[in-house]
Structures are given as C-alpha cells and as structure tokens.
Image (cartoon, rainbow, N blue to C red; front, side, top):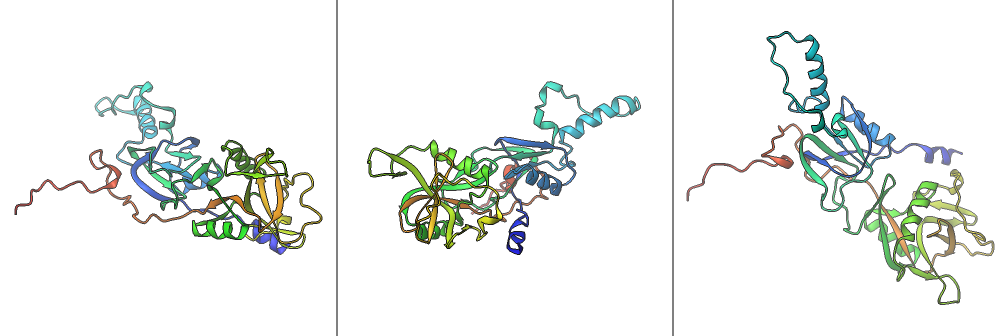
Length: 307
C-alpha cells in the first residue's frame, strides 16, 4: 500500500518560457482569462495540455479582452472631454483573442514551424529544450514519443530510450493504450510487423513498451511502479501465458491489447520522451515587445563601423 501511495503522488510538470512576443498556432484545447502565468500553467495542467500561450494583461495595452472591456466601460462613464479608446471593429477579433491563456494539445517540436510573431503573447512549453530526434511524434494531451522500427530485445530497447532522454512508453491507462495503439494501426507494415504464427502471411504490429515482469507474477511499469497499483488492464486473450518463463516483457498491439513475450525476443519499441527545461537560451521576458524586434532578439545597430 505504501508503494502504491507513493506512486499515486501527482507529478507536477513545469512549464518553461521558450519564445517572447510570439505564440504557437497549434490546436487550442482550453481558453481562459487569468491574471498570472501561474494560473495559466495550472489551467494547462488541468486540461492536460503540453504548452500554452500567455499574454500578460498589461502588455503594451494590447490585450484585446481588456481593451474591449475598457471601451464598453468608457461608453457610459467617461466624461465628454476624456479621449476615447481606439475604435476596433468587432469582426476584427477572433474568438481566441478574447482570452489571454491558450492551452495547446501539443508543443512546438518540428523546428518551431507554427510559431508566429504576436507582441501580446509569450510561449511556454513542457519541452523547452530541443528534442533529441526529428522523428519525435506528439500524441495530443498524452506526450512525446519515438516509434522505433529497428528491432531490439527489451534490454537494448530500454537503454536506447534512456539514451534518447526518455524511457519505454508508460501504458498503464486506457487513454495511453488506446492512443498509442491507434497510432500503431496507422503505421505502414514492414519492419514494424512481427510474425505472430508459423504462417508467414500472418503478421501483427508489436511494439515493446514500458511493462515487464521483474518478479514472477509481478509486472512493473517503466517508472518502476507495480501494475497492481493501477486499475486498467488490456491483456490479450491467453496473456499473460501461465507457462511463461520470467522475465517476461510486454508488447502493445495495434488492437490496443497487451501481450507477453520473452525479453530476448527482438521487436520494434516505443520511447516516451521526458519533459525538459529550462531552455538553453532563455528569453528575456522583461524586454519590451516590438514588431521590429521579433523573438526577443536585439535589433541590429544602426551605427556603421568604419575601418
């Protein structure tokens, strides 16, 4: 019980700033108006987001939500001689523009391809440092993964994932098992397919994941948690095999089931990349945003150096 209680303690992942005066255009899964970046980070955790855009309320008086509230307030309370805020057409606003906290389902992981300049926002992510591989894949609201086609036994697969900055994929939940198996099902057959019987025409995608039988009858996750501490199970019919010889290791199928195999068997495998941060080159958030100085870079000097 003590082991399960320790495993049940919530791990609080930390978001780190990666871009100043810029935001990400990835899919938004949560919108909220908050006063501090901490509130936005807590909201992102509740929504199981992996990144978020945050616009400080007092950023250059450019928060559109506050600007609209001020305009409506001044319509009824401002004296005639008080200058009115600039007129802004309602149709010029997007729905997201009325919120200063945008929670994203996936982080920027492919050369920041969907980052755009926006002086209202700063971009925060769980993966502030560059991911170790360009082949990394985002499973929305689940994590970042590497689907390795090269067949290795369980020990080599484990060490390969550690070297990549992660571990074999954690699958002790229905959401993780379903989403990972769904992704496997859409992969082309080839080196990923493993013979499931003596019939060469019968093939089934199988991937080693982070679940193994260290002790007879006791399975442990990639985080060294006992499987007994989790409710969810997805064993395929006949698995785990009663006549198996420990140690046994678990592979995930494209049907969302778990199968046990000898750990010396070679199979493709799934690595789960761990969160990282802070960024090696942290943005200076106190620097004033300016359209001529995107990405918080120092503007080039106008002085001409004479030789």
